[in-house]
Length: 141
Image 1 (tube, rainbow, N blue to C red):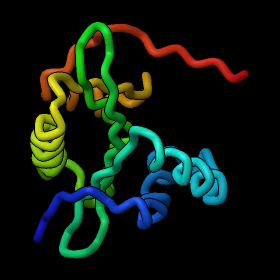
Image 2: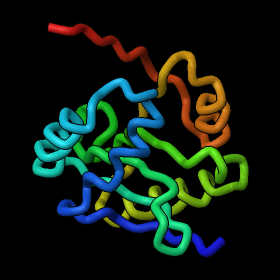
Image 3: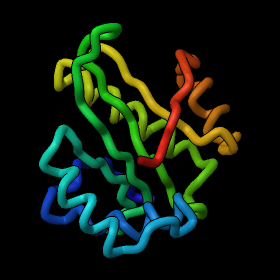
Image 4: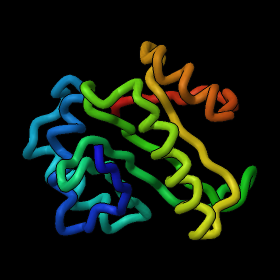
């Protein structure tokens, strides 16, 4: 493996859609994701990729904001690594890179949400030092 980690340029954001669809079991169409990512890249959103040579094998969205309870923060979103590359320590390497990137942007904390049923991610995030701080509620309007 020849791994690298880098920010995905806004003009190439749609390259992440196949991985996002794997993460979400195709919950949203490609057209809807194209529309949403076109908006997101013009907000406080960035996306990092894990590459094996030039092949995109993992993604992590990042939202940057300042919150009253924790200061400047990077919220990690839609983390996914291709199944064939999982359980090889890549996630740990990727998060180390993400933390350094967040620090370079002046962040002092990192936050995330994870699906309740995604038990493997819970173990990973606990091992990364994340703690449960609250519950994330969702309502369709």
